Length: 358
Image 1 (cartoon, rainbow, N blue to C red):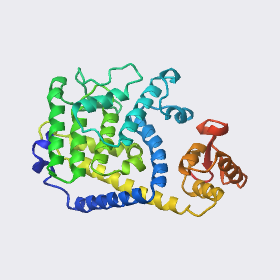
Image 2: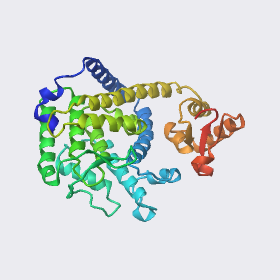
Image 3: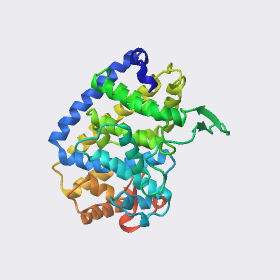
Image 4: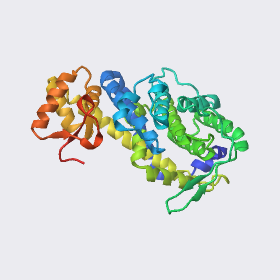
């Protein structure tokens, strides 16, 4: 909320270089809309791949790790609680349902406190926990980086949270409606303040990333559907936390510096749009090839280093599992790929690795 009390102060010292970077994001948004109109099937395949990566990465940032051999089953919709082996799997499926609700909505819900608590309830719907409620105890954000517990930020108390969160939502909506600043900067301020308030007892990070996806889509930045922003945050986790730490200093006094966090978020989105365009270009290059040639090209040049048949099936709709396995067998004989024993699984669930890559 404190970022919105005086937006002129908060955003008035915008780094000069950031203007050009924000303009690049707007160009990417325009090209994305063009691709969506021209290549709906291709973008649908990208969205399916991204869904799995986003669920996995956003959970992993918070230490919610599941057995890779279980992921394929857990990302299916409507997995029943009796099939979960532990709490991590329950929370993983909760994130699945929450992100699916956002990504598949034809009309996005307005951001309100009840909607935020609804998403939180989704996160913990399978755990029997207390999802959907504001925190009732004082929480602390601590670091153990130096071998001992070090308090790096003290969020507002539960009593303060009761009015700070609604105030943040109201001020955010007002800034959006009046176009008070570039949409990405308003989003950066909203997410920063949300994480500073830390409104729930557990799941604040995942809830913030869900809301980030929601408000990006709301403002027309649909790249979050086709490239996993959560995966990029996981890959740069140290920079993610460092940017938050720097921007939350003096937050309570309202004299904090939003730019470390804003520039981090802009950088994540820049990389996402670059990756999106390269993925679209790569998939376009598969046009005109036979089904076996498409599988070969995808596996050798576009698939993750470690992949499963499911990844190829999702990326290449219309290609049968029989064709995929035929090509994989041939590539294995050519010693271009091998079974990845470390990833577990066998038969249809086996993981494959391109030889010579790490």
